Amino acid sequence: MMVGSAPATKFEILTKELASKIDTIITNNENDSSKLVGILLEIQDIIPKQYIPMEVAAYVSEKMDIHLSRVYDVISFYAALSASPRAEYVVQMCDSVVCKVTGNNSLKDALQEYIGAGVNEVSADGKFALEYTPCFGACDIAPAIRVNGKVYGNLTSNDKIKAVLDRCK
Ligand code: FES
Image (spheres, protein in one colour):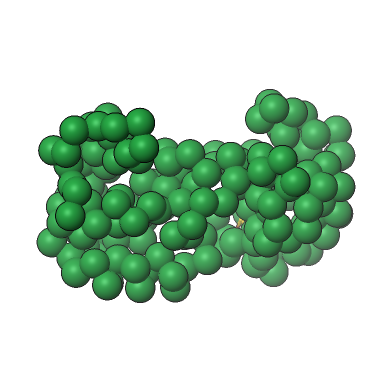
């Protein structure tokens, strides 16, 4: 298994720099296996195309002394985690009731039109993926979206939504 100390090649995702960032995330979470979901979400946020590559899952498994099958169980159980590449920018909308009554439907329509893809789809240029996710703590600034882990709230007009996504281009 190629982990950590292997020499970097242009094909390798798990560079020394990424391994170091993953080490920091694990340390900041006290190497606590009960925080595995949050740790994987943080790691996913720093990997292009927002996913957990196989070699990264193996690295986390070894570093945290958690069986690899458990790491994969978590990745496949949580919709917010992915084992395969998604898009450069993953745009998430909350599907909780609170947000649904505060304008998430018009938000969805505007996002679909701007991105040119439906929910659980990726835009033709591979730039954006659109998906629903459970509450991400932005209830007080709904309607809100999360783009690669960063929250944008009070998106009460199409212009505001467009301004957020224009920053990704
Ligand atoms: S209920 Fe939607 S972000 Fe919390």
